[in-house]
Image 1: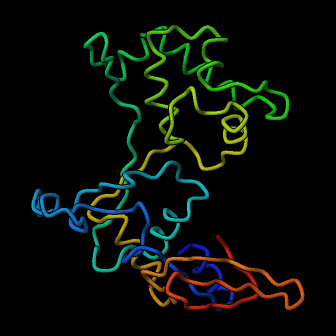
Image 2: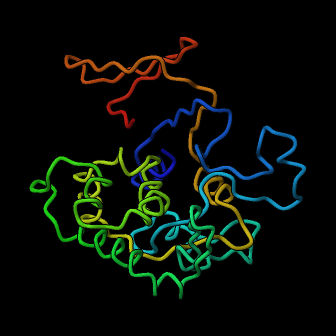
Amino acid sequence: GITCARELKEAGVSSVVVEAQGRIGGRVLNSLQSEDPRMREFSKLPMEIGAEFMHGSENNVLFEWMKKHGVKGKPKASTMSLKWPNYLYFGKEGRLVDEDGAEKDEDLQRMFKVFDMLGEMDPDLVPEESLLQYFARMGVPSRVLDMGDAIFANDYAAEACDVGIKETVQEQVTWNYGEDYLVLHNCTYSDILRDMAEGLDIRLKWRVREVAYSDAEKRVTVTSEGGEVLTGSRVIV
């Protein structure tokens, strides 16, 4: 929402951002912002407890914003590129594997190769099946299927048995962000969002009850749970 509003503002279009929570950022949250006092007291330095990294340095709005504007009040703010996954833990085997060990594990490499093949497929032609079914059909050994959940399915906030292969293929085919995994250094994601939100009209604790569109008037009406009403020519949900 903040990104959309920022783009509109720079294009000379007025907009209003409504947010149900009492803060901006959605799942972007650090420990010092937590409502849990134990989390706030755990460390004097902020720790990311929501989004932790940026996947890809190409066509990345946050990354480009940071390169262009920096972070206000944080002159040493920067990004660091990390290898991911750099460690893999096989729970059933009680074994921790580093990057070198993973490269020597034929079962893991088979799973990675099978997943990479998705980027060469046509989403309209793949069968209706889950990511787990695809792995099994392609002969991925059972001992690494749990790792497939942790590495791939977690990106969709689900397990491999609940992730559809068509959507996975669609994302792999259209992915244009690169494969860098970036973490922030000397700043937090909340710092960047604060800067991006500067000058925008943002209404906090504004929980939407209804969005209605009138064909006759070509207007959109958005009503809050408290009865407040906003009207405009367009709405982005």
